[in-house]
Length: 243
Image (cartoon, rainbow, N blue to C red; front, side, top):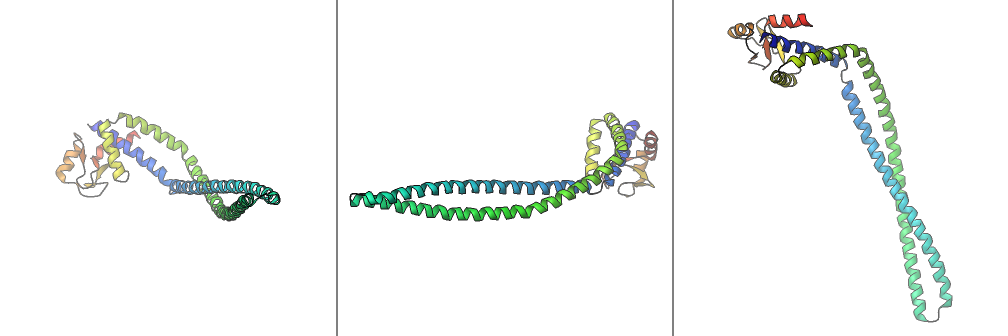
């Protein structure tokens, strides 16, 4: 059991060092993720607006083509007015002329609205572009800072991760699951030693009888106050020697 406890505490010591390296990065990883998310959102907005603009331009082009066709028909109908032989033919032609003129006016009005809409979209895209440029520049700066910090500690991080992998492989599955659950819930500290008769995690005093039991290293005990795994000073000392 003592070896089991030593291995768990050794894992905690390695994770402590990895946590320190992570802390050196500060809020840079979160800032990079946030900026990347903002940039992607704006890119999506611009993409959607570009699609709307393209759709509107295509619609306006179709309208223009239809207006040209209607104007050609109008010219033909008006020339035929001079060739009618009776009122019936005249009424039919004037009806076609009226319909063509109404459709032309309708399409012209719609094209004006489409042009206004296209200009509005262009303005919105123009307004978004500087925001995108600013965020992109800021992201490059944050990524460069983060990359520099990561590079400075790269060798040490690789060494620690390699050592952690080897230590974790020796930990029993149930112990590891318990360790990770407590670590996640309590800010990274899952295994702590008793220091000056108190839990070194929450600093609450451990009852004397429990201290004696923990010193025997015969089983795993948890702090009654915070729930962290408690180990004796001997276990902590042995684990520190192995690092």
